[in-house]
Length: 268
Image (cartoon, rainbow, N blue to C red; front, side):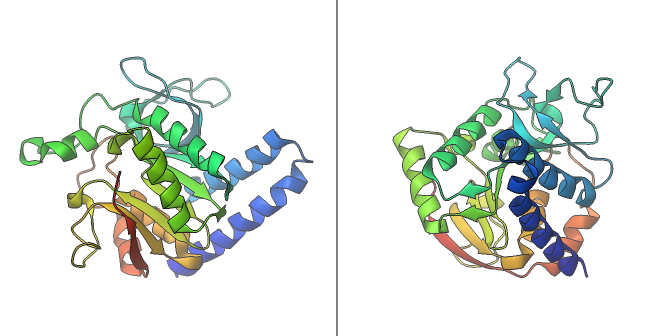
C-alpha cells in the first residue's frame, strides 16, 4: 500500500513541476518557489511529525554559513528558533539531518556544477561533534563522516546517470574536492537514484564487490517508486542527533524496497 501511495506522490510532484511554469506566469523565482514548495510539502507529510522542514542557510557553531538551501530536514532536537512568521531565524548544522536542493533540470552541466558548489557550502558547516553512539567502538572514518550534513539533489529531468557521473567525477578530480565534500545523493524522479557510497561500511548492497562491500557511485533503478528509494536512502543517513532505535518508516521502507543497482564508477 505504501509503495502505491509513494508512486502516486511521484506522479503528483512531476505534475506540480510541469504546472509551475504556468502558475508562476513566467517569473523564474515564482516558478522555483512552486517547485520547492511541492518538495517541501512531500517531506512534511511523509517524515515523522516531530521533524521540521524548513529553508535557509545552515550555520555551524564556529559561525560558518552555507548557501541558502531549498529544503532542510531538522531533527526534533533542533531549537525552535522561529520568528513571528514561523520562519527559522537560525538553523544549526548540529540539528540538521539532511539538506535537499531542488534542481528541476539536470540536463545542464552548469546546474550540476552549481549543485556541487552548493553541496560544498553545506559540507563546510560541520556538526560540532559526532552524533554516533558508542563512538569508542566506531572507526575514525565513520566518526569523521558523521560530522557532515548529508546533501541531496532532487530533479525531475536529468542526463543519463553515466553522463552525470562523468561530469561530477571530472569536476571533483580536477578541483581536488575531498570525498566528504561531495554530493551524497541525486534523485531523478520517476527514474532512480545516484548514490555516492563514501565508505565501504556504508554500502548496504548485499552483493559481492564491486557492487557490495565497496565505495563508488551507484545507480539504483526505482522507476515510479523513486520517492520510496529516496526516503530509504535518507533513513540510512546519520542524523544530527542519534535515535535509540530503528525508525518505523525504515522498517516499512526496507520491507517494500524493490530495485536494481549498477556501479557507475569509482569515487573521486
